Length: 178
Image (cartoon, rainbow, N blue to C red; front, side, top):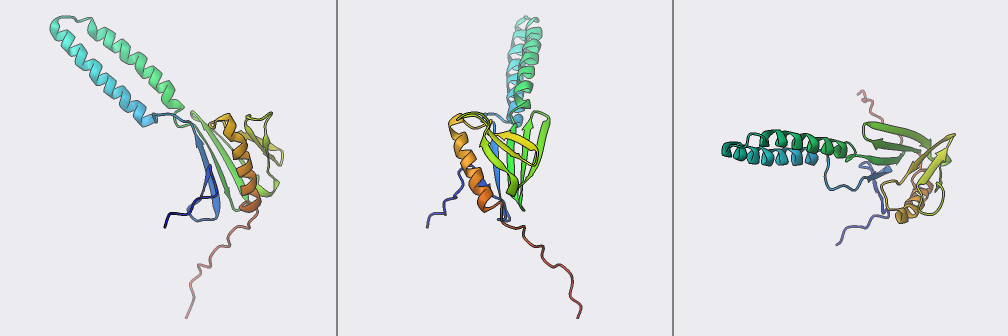
């Protein structure tokens, strides 16, 4: 029997089944660890070529290799710094928590699900604006513009269905005396 198809295109259910999570990340081929691995690989290749040229009597090759590795390292650090950028929306226990990570900065806003408004920020294809209780946040920057309307519709549907469910009552963990 094939697995059941999720009703959510962008989101998925949280482990305990009492909420939803959307993780919208930058679409990059290399994550921070792979950037570091690429730098080490290119460094090893440059070191091998430099040693070969040094052995042939061209001592200036070491200075050029060091400069090349410094420039490449700088470029990779700049790229790796934003490789883990993402937006994470969590809808659980009657609250919508929105986190946007950009480089070393993280913005966080929490909304009561019953009071959240979801609308395009300006026109069709613009970012999705979440607002409520005097706060606002825009999401969808890592989605193609034509998919942002679908994200807004999915968020509205989730807020109507999952967001209005009451929080699960805590289980009684008190020990019983005999």
